[in-house]
Length: 352
Image (tube, rainbow, N blue to C red; front, side):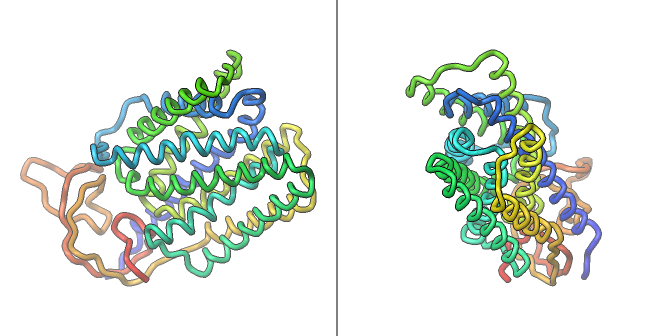
């Protein structure tokens, strides 16, 4: 049985979430460099994720699965990687390299995410995806090489930004199971843990506090670029998997680089331009990728948010308990064989 409409829409919806997350994150990178000038990296990270936590403290819908106690260890790991180590590396790197270079270099997060998703979740890359990853890797290598040609400080800054992308990519892959939980609760837990850890370390290293205006600006950057962006990213992961979400999210650096250019940063030579072209080509390949074939679903019992009109959830409900538009409960799947466009979501982790 061939199904196309709803499944194709879910691919487009997931891609839209990922692109919106990229816009939210990319716009904050050059602003972070400007507002975080003179601040320690741990203070900067604490303020960013304090903003993300404030964003997540808002009314929630009732259709998503809440966090469970067995998610605690994973939450601590992703908070340490994505809400402390990564922003600290980024904040330090931004001080030692240009905003344009740093924004474009963030594309390496997509490279690392795709490769790690393949290793940990067996997510298919494909020829088109492989070519896209290769182009982005070459672009990142050009940026690092151009930094080395300038000064040792600039090269270390580029490497610090690269380290941040590796930490975020690992966070992306480890947080894949959390994408099936309530995104708001995940953002709140991760941001609160990350901000607390960074604040403690800022005290340990004796970092000074920000001015009032810088503090407000960084909290605002965190609410948009880390809170809203993470929530959208998790929703995208739920629909299209870690690798494809990470690939589309790599559009973020182009917006950041463009904004840095508008703000007056004219740093960058032929290597930066060539890297931008390579990275843009990689993003274009990912955005136009499609995937559909006949596949099998084994019998499965699990819990997550779902609808009953998506071609995969046809289980009955008790009389007087209508399924509603979106809801979460433990349910069973019968064996099923069909064909449709799909990404590597919760129900499509089959081998190829």
